[in-house]
Structures are given as C-alpha cells and as structure tokens.
Length: 471
Image 1 (cartoon, rainbow, N blue to C red):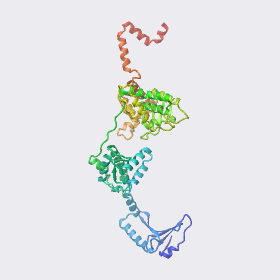
Image 2 (cartoon, rainbow, N blue to C red):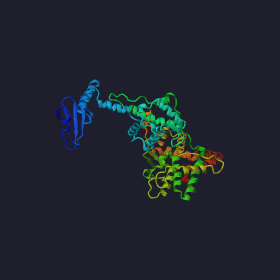
Image 3 (cartoon, rainbow, N blue to C red):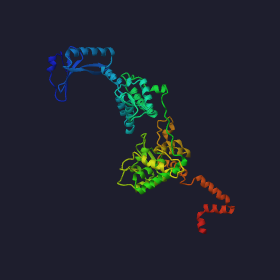
Image 4 (spheres, helix red, strand yellow):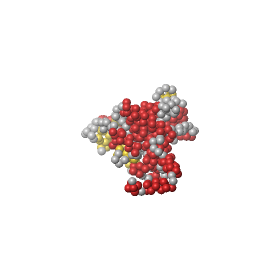
C-alpha cells in the first residue's frame, strides 16, 4: 500500500486498477485516513483502526465530492470519537438503524425468522390484519408506537373502525370488532416482542422500549373473546348424518360430484376429528388401505400425523376410490380437481335438509364443529387424554408434562381407541345397537327361560360342534 500526502491533483491522477480489483492508498498527514479506488474508477475516503484486536473500516464519503481537507477533518473527528467512546462507529450506526426499525421492516424480519415454522396462510393473515388496521403505521419506527397509540387504535377497531390513512371509516373491507381488535393486538405484540429481543447494541442491550401492547393488559382492555364451543350434539348425530347422506344421494343422482366430495369429507371429519384443511387436502399418496392407516404431513402445528382407518373410514375411502377419475391426487377433489376451498353451498344444503320433517330445529354447523364433536365423544368414552391429544394432533412437546414426551402411538396402537369413538358415534346416531342394550335384552330373555332351557342354551353356546352333530 502506497503512502503519500493527499492532494486533489495527486488523487485525480491515480490509476484505475484491473477489472475486479481495487487498490488502497494511505495519507501521510492523518494516520488512519485511506483512499480506496475500485476498478470502475470510483474513489472514496475511509478510516481504518484496530479496536479490541479487530480491524474496522468506516467510510467517510466519495472523492471529489468530499475534498481532501474535509476528509482529513472528518477523519480526525471520527478517530477522536473512537478513542473517546472506544466503540466501533459502524456498530453505533447499526444500532441507530436498528433503533429506527419500522413496523414494515420488523414484520418482514419476524416472518423471515419463522418462514419454516408457519404456513403461508398464517403469514397472509398476519400481514392482512396489520395492513387493514394499522397500514398507516408501516413506515413508522417501532419506538414511536407508544402505549397511547396502541390503546386508542385498539378501541377504534373494537368500535368497528376501518383504517385507511389516519381516519377511521365505517365502510370498507376491514370492519373491526372485538375479536378483530384482539387479533390485531396479538399480532402486533408478537412482532414487537420479537423485535424488542432481536435488535440490540454490541453490549447486548435492548434498543427498543418495552412493548406498548402491555397497556392492554395493565388496563384490562383485552376483550378475551371466548373460544367457540359449538358442536353437533349427540342427540342430533342421527339427524345430521341422515341429512349428509340425503344430500349425498341426491347429488349422486344429479351428478354433482363436488357436493358428493364435500359430504364424504364431512363424514371423515366427524370420524377423525381432523381439521378442515387436513381433510380437504388429503391425498391418495398418503392412504394405505391395505395397512389400514393414512397420514398427514402438513398439519397446523407442523407435526406429521398417522391415523388408523376404521371400518367406517374404510367404506368411505373405498367409495371414493371407486369414483376417482383421471388419477386425481385428492380424495375429496373440488369441481375442477383441486382442493376444496369453499364448501358452504353444500353445508347450507345439509342444514336445510336437517329440518325437512318440519318438527326439528335446523342444525347449523361448521367444518370445525365436527372436530369438536369428535373430541367431546372421545372424552366421554374415556380414551385417555394422551391418546386423544395424539388423535387430534395437539402438540404436547412444549407442555410441562414430561410424561407426554415419552408417549408415541402408531396407527396400529390407535386403532382400538378410534374404533371405540366410532362405535359411540354410531350408537348415538342409532346406526348400531348399543352394547349395553344387547346385554339388557339377553338378560331379559334369560329371565323367561326355565332351568332346563338355560342349560340347553348354555350347552349350545359352549359346544357348537356337538350341537351340529346331534342335528
């Protein structure tokens, strides 16, 4: 590296290095001042220092926009700050940049950190809720979003406000509500908490103030929207399954393949407790009829799920296999062969069918009601909480219950619990005889028999071969 006294004429006369290379020159007047020349001919001033056994470089500006005198003055001042603060100016610059991080950039960084853990639909939901109700904050630094602004915005969304710019409106695509207000605040809290911990200075100190969403907890502003509890009642299972079958049979006659797919999918949802997307997205490549099991790779929580094929499911799968066309990969294809996205038309038909006799209240339901029904029936028949969690694919690894981490059930081991739940659903629907009812009927019959008749019946049951020979 060549050292000489920088002058304007000398710097203008420096040669341009070969393609892909750059050269560096040192000023003899100010120790640490350098000039870098790239192969494009661009020249820029910088300072170089060693601090904590590490070299760092700080760019001052381009030549000739920055004169030699200005560069020397700026270099002396910067080097003095380094000596005083004992900090890398680049670190300070990065800290200032991190402290000024905007909501938009923070959201992008948050999504980037979780792109392998959450689905695109969830990402779209996060982006949509923040854009709809706080799009005017996207270019605002997180540090400027204080408690008062969060509380005011949360209250406005609660009252049904729609946010475009700074003015709430009553018409548009993002009408607020209590549930929307809490959802917006939870997403904002998640993004802010990540940024609050992620962006730090070189000493590890946080650069952002405490999350402003804390004000909603301090002042008890959360609405605490309750979880939905709707389900298909046990005494409605017969009517519901009958309505599903009635719509299915009519659809077969009218050749409405889409409606038939939805009806079969709803039956599977009831007898498996699977989520809507898991049922509609089920592919033939994940079904092993001979082995009596199927599996789902992409569940909501990201864990794979292997489930048994009970007798009821086997009948549905074989029926779907018989009507499969063009090697469609999905068990329950939409009208154009893809994944079903909107089953509401068929659900409305089933709900309407449920009151056709004129004496019953219409059964209103959603796809998720079938999942809640499955879980409720499973709990009533006592399959056990650990097995139920596995059947419904509820994540257990983060639980404080250490035992759960040691329990792993295959489809074969889940076959009996699944059959137990299936039997209970069919019994409530009146499609099979209750086991307790059979016992009662048998005892009633035995009570009417004489001692001799009882002996003969018992002998014929215990010795069926001798009975055949005697005949």
